[in-house]
Length: 302
Image (cartoon, rainbow, N blue to C red; front, side, top):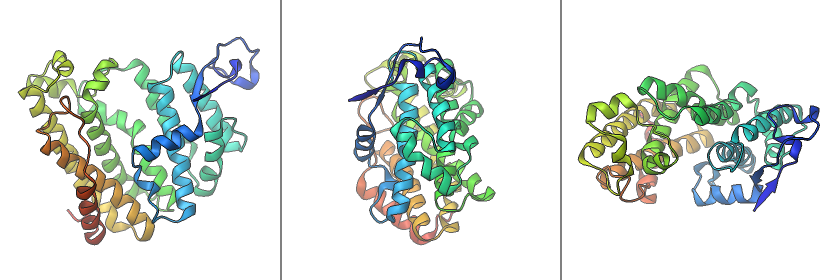
């Protein structure tokens, strides 16, 4: 089910100053967002984490998913939905948010000291998705990940009170790697939506053309390209994974879980012959747990 927004919420201007002539749009209900979290096995929802931490991480996840919905799935005027979300995010920082998910976020940003400039980057990334459909090289893609992925890790470190400059830099490596892996998982789906997150320079190097992304199975060239991107993401996870050793307690538990999920996803690509078109590539629970145990004990040493 969805929650209809008032007509004056979606014009791209401040809804508090409008006359009510914009058309309406829809957001999913909070319960549906949390159900999506459970279906995705969102790692920070682990029951071993204290209730207060889980509450903050659930609130963050709800916000992240809502922004992604507005930019990727919502029918109608997505730019207007994103504009509304930015206005409501500003209200959340004043304690006056209108949407239920952002009202839940209010306590989290206040108690954890998450800067507005960090949280709003997710909205900026989804705005970029409306106009940028291709990336020339990995540097361009990495700049996009700085908006779409890295703020997630920075926000989590704020929850644990460890958003120090050096640790955030390590988190950025992890989050960018996780985003690259997700892009590799979703190659076919993204292409059907008109988006390609594989850098054009890398595609040319491996002889991959756009039509390859629409096939029922990955070509030899595409499998080679996917392996290249997955291997790069794995190296980034190893380099950024030293962050685990800088953390203690529940922060170490949670961050080790993120890195473990990424390493298990890379292993799943290997098992699938680096072909994300023929079947969904998903990390196995056993491999994820083994990677988590190793990271937790060894501290993510290179």
